[in-house]
Length: 276
Image (tube, rainbow, N blue to C red; front, side, top):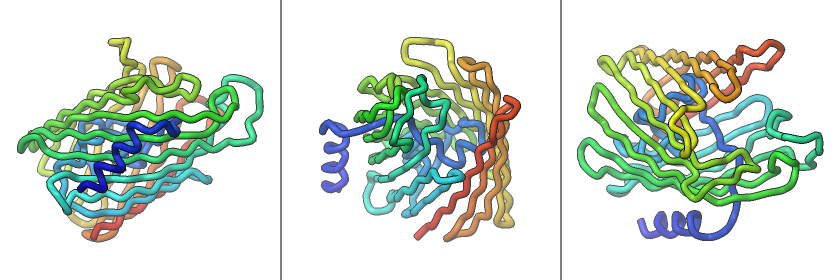
């Protein structure tokens, strides 16, 4: 436990790195609508409180075709407080850069460390320190250090959550700003669920993105997902679908996100989760 605390202090107090954040595979498949939903490893990138109500030790990896990827380890079994650590590397596409200046470094990389736990039987909290580095939107090498703070209410059939991202201010030149997300999820018999989440800048009550996601988990080792999200800033909507093979020790995942813009490529992701 002391080692987890020491690493978290390092990530949230020492001046190192940060940049554009990583969207995990389940978020991708469900319209980025899971900030108010119980999650496992992906809570590291979504809401650090979202894994407060699971009791697992797992390793997770995902690949966003062609070459972006993320890996993480989650441990909520060892002590009353859970811990997660992860690393990601993603391509900075042409839409990220705001000028024609070419960058020799087209990769954004990030490291994250989180602690989470339950305040009560129904309320969980979490904090995630993150260090992200790579080119900024002008093509210059940049870095930033920040943190996310989240809370989740677990009411069984329904869950509510909120997360404040980049609490130290972020870095606008890396497309990171202080923002918040509020979401909820309602489930039926742990088979069907519907999730909704909004994202907004901290100085604005109007969300810049609204997402809706649905999930069906079969008792026969597979799951199906779908989602829709709308970006009010760019006036673009996205449809997404996903599928999983689910077993007690190994799960395999796939997600596809399709933008409404014509002649815009879709985003494919593959992932796997190993439980011990």
